[in-house]
Image (tube, rainbow, N blue to C red; front, side, top):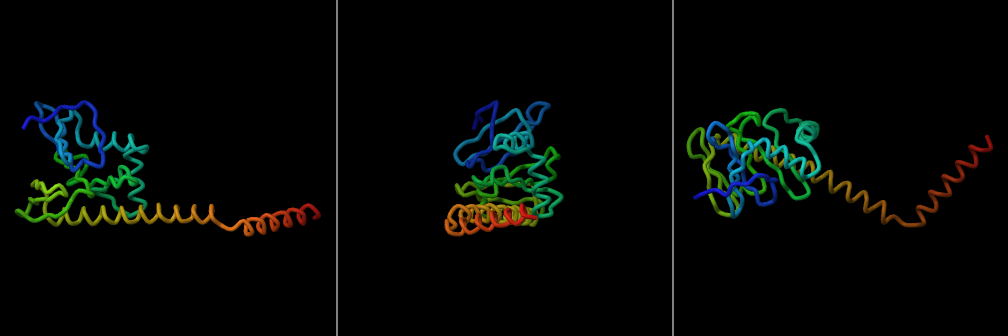
Amino acid sequence: MKLKQIEEYEVNPFTMFIKPIAYGSKIYSEIFEVEDEFLSPFKPLDIIRNSCEYYGSDYNGRRHGTKQLVGYAHKIPIAIDPTNRIFFFPTTSPNSQECIWISHEHVKDYNRVSPQETQILFNNNQTYKFPISCSSIISQLERTAYLRTKLMQRIEYNEKKSFYLLQRPKAMEASEDSYQYGKQRVKNKL
């Protein structure tokens, strides 16, 4: 199958995984979507970095935020766009030329093929083999799920807080305003 070559690419809700591929003397990316495959002249990490920027953040900020939120320091999953559930995890160190980035959202199941190879079944019922141990896949799936949970809890908490502040009774606001006005009058008399 001949891959469609593209110049620009942002990870999106249909992206399943991005893997490096040798193309002459350079490293390109083979991009697998739910119903399509592409070849990009950029390395997988470059696509992840550009995608973070596309969604209004930067890769280093996302890495730092993940470290602060869940305490991971190595092979950190990245929340490219939490509102669209776009979370990717690396199979090795992101700086490694062998690193493959996999979408957490699209993984349906997995099984061990050999000590250093795992087959992943994606939500579109396609399977692919990856050069990573099953225990590493399990660990990365769990770490990414934990990151998703923590981020979603914070987003939901802020939404509830905003809803409460917008919906609180007007009488409460009036009494708070009177209290603040009374405090100011007392302060002025002193």
